[in-house]
Image (cartoon, rainbow, N blue to C red; front, top):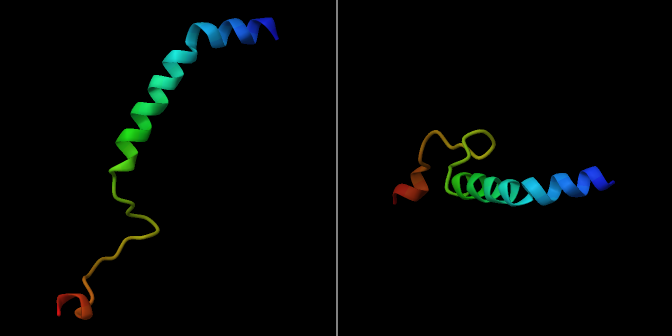
Length: 46
């Protein structure tokens, strides 16, 4: 347990910064797998 705590103390801020960067970059990305709509419906064009 002591080794794990030492590891967290050394690299915890690095992991937090990496998680924040990944979160910011993926929050603005469009999902193209599940919610992809390849054409605009006619009702929306009206």
